[in-house]
Length: 346
Image (tube, rainbow, N blue to C red; front, side, top):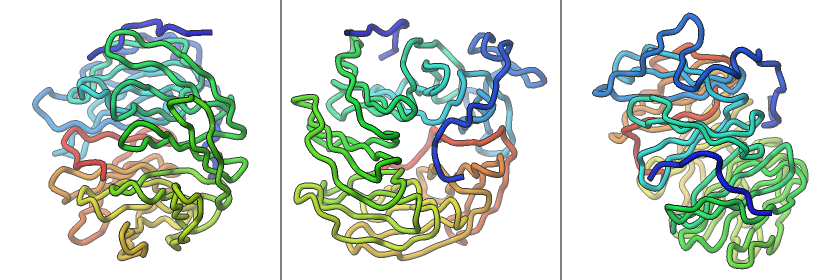
């Protein structure tokens, strides 16, 4: 059955939802209203903005990038985990997994401009490079949902069962394939977007999480969260070609923006590793406390911002010294993060 969006969309180890209760009052607060005790105003329009999702508090934090201060905290849906910029770069989508909806945020100011309801368990999300598809991974529902995306009509056209626990997703540059990590079956699945079916699965290490494709399109890099390495797959040959030891709880990725180096967050090791995607080896490492998770790097490459998931903080790393220079208190279980003046994803 096709499903139409209900609102206009402008041009530990596991990711399991923690299921901690959020009060009915908080869930009923309009998206643009601040949480009690916090100012309702968004960040200054002329100030660099940082947006952090507090998955344990049903909120997002606004941080002034120049003062390193939290300037506001806004209510969103229950368990916001990941976020994604629309192809026109005008809207940041906040995916609320347990309340089954999306919030639409101005990526520059943090202002909440709308809400899309009835999106089932949007744990992870992505747009295809050709902008025709919007894909969500429903981790607790064990499926991936495909939505059309043509700038006018947004409809769910396919539900693909993918037991168990589909987690992170990544598209090929030609939009033909989308890859999905399956945390509870220790696999990577490849979905053929032409036939809208699962073409194959490949076994990897325990509890795969983050996934990313090298700029040349040859290798898939998979964070093996239940171990201490990144598994590298030649996906066209469907074979593992390397296991790069990084640290316990190898989890998520962020490119340095130079098309060569990849950052890996090791949540249990409390470190970030730098991996050379061509040589398939670790070239550097530095400490980030509190369970480092999602990462963003400034456009000039001088600062790395990291959500410290277990500490309820955001850590700012000076990339010259590779040391944490700021620690900013936010909400519970901070997860996704977005910088407006960020470096390219790879």
